Length: 452
Image 1 (cartoon, rainbow, N blue to C red):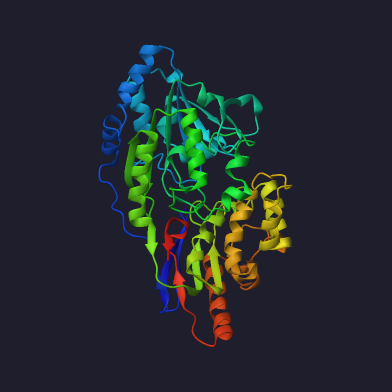
Image 2: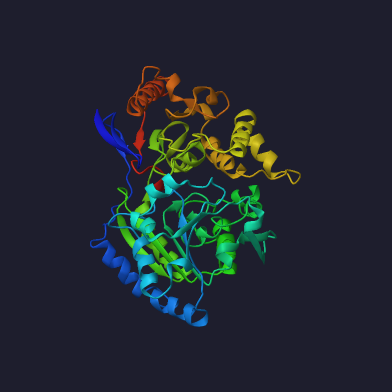
């Protein structure tokens, strides 16, 4: 036996696996030295954009009372907003030094359709100096109709209702993290606006069943990806003066800072991301062990960890997925629960027939249940062994998958739960196959993307 490390972002622990286990990590990315210096230098020398100080000066010259909005991600993403690699304070500091009053700067949390962040969560996520400055911070609320204005329609046909605090600002800056994304190809850039600042109703076209049925709506794919292309169209309609995006390594250290034109800087970040996030693989395995990472705050988000396993799993294989859920509701919102329950009841094939039927009335958050179907096309739900201590045991009467606690009732910690249920899966496969199973471990969870 040998030890591997499961790093879930909030915690990490060793797990013993058979010696023949293939460890399949993503490539190495060098962390930046002197990160704050490089952040400030990028603000002064952006890609295909005037420097930040020039942008501020231009806006104030046109209107001394110009309003600035800085869009930030919520805590479902490990964006480096504090510490020596923090991207937020240098940005705000440069804006203030450029002459814009604090009272004219707004921090807007791009929650998408996620719940709002409370003050405690914001203080945990952001640099303490932001609070010392007294900047106004508000959450985007996708259901508050008075907060939206229309910016028109796209060729997919939906009316685009966007957060008015963003639309009505004079200087628009987006911040975020560029990592692989299982629908949009990569996060960051245009995603801060779409879906980050959309009304709930405007997300329907972007996340509809037919759109997400495209094989190009997948990790690390931009060209031909309908989710990416629609998000980019919407973001261009809304306008953006500058993005400040980061890339991280598997230990959440800053590896790149990409500042400038929304599309150019984002594409540069994605190109760099691919050099270490894309993992060429040559075969499939009987058993795959992975985890939901930092993003797996609940079952809804944990789909991202499960989907990266698909290229590696054989048709008769087993997936063991570890997740540490930090969200107040470890499963997800009411609509997600409704749709994932339907998936469990109907099965993958009938569920997809239902949501692709022209008479189907769209349900918010159906998209995440749809993404789970990609895994269940490859393996039956019972062969997903889900390792979580936070989800109530009774929820697995309707959640698709096997509750690892039924296989390892003596486990007291997540580490024990993963080890015991994994050992159970190895033994089951020995009996099923009549040989030692071929095993793969994905140490980077949802961030490393295997490609056959």
